[in-house]
Length: 255
Image (cartoon, rainbow, N blue to C red; front, side, top):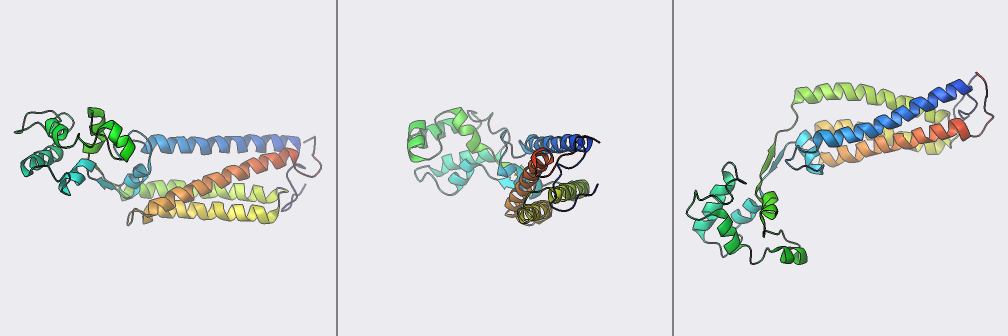
């Protein structure tokens, strides 16, 4: 039995169709698992529990994000803050155990008291919600504003090993899905466009790993390209399974 481009997979023997369906389902499960693994692996790299773009930036470019409160104080905000109190806050924010020393008496005035006196008039939770500014009314509000985040990028040796493993396995996986998709009875032009997006997505994803070391802007390329590769491959696998059982052409009931 021969199957040509665009002739469909439904004419395959029953055993072959069952095996092909099982393998495609496992591949779909693997794509979902890889997404979950990525979220779990990178979720706290930026010192925040939830997964965000900063996690990816920290992995491929490195992250140096000063505390938002430090940025505001060094820029002269609030204008009513005396220089002595400003220096106390800077000393507190640049020291160690920042959260533990929020109400410490190591300085002439407790940092918590300075914030209450000079910041709380504008940064209550009610005002923050209505004006779109950070709240500073409670300790839970303060915590995300006083943490500086500095994360070194993944070492070149580790990234090279990861590239070696992923470039080979993901490209071979993509080739298999590509050729199976071309054998289905779905319109060739439509399938060709999807295959092009999938292939270029993998190039952008893995190439972006290295380009992002020079500029964090390439992290967007990584995320968009990776989503294109995985998303299109998921769509193609679904189309392959559908064509295997419901595509045009006469099915073969025996092996």
